[in-house]
Image (cartoon, rainbow, N blue to C red):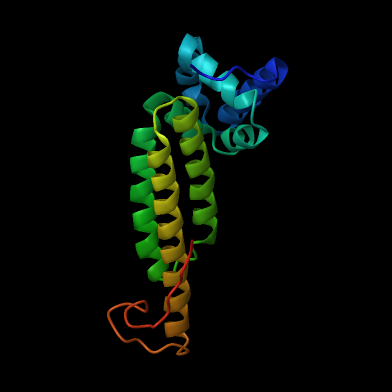
Length: 175
């Protein structure tokens, strides 16, 4: 029940560009990509992605190894990896690492993971929105934790607990 590629030429070009990006970054992965491309269901999924969404195609080109892992392992495995990576980033950001670039990376990977899960019918709407909401919450906590820790280091914000967030009085309300 996969959507048909809206533009077959776009699907073909998108796949070629993804393959080229993978060859440039991880040529050893090409046999795995070729094996995946030989599977009729995987080919249909890739055509649905590349033939319907320039944004998802762009992500696959920017993150060719991640896209291959996603299509090989499935969205559940990759979602668990993203959760673990984001949890680690939160601790690193509180310790001083600027989380800006990693958060942009995770956002791209989250978009592709969620789209593949949705297009392939692997996740229902509740799971998709829950995953997006959990990421938004974690990303906001990571960014705010980093900013509060930096303010505490500069002496602008007093430490009232074990971390800069503890007892800071800073709250974010979102809908």
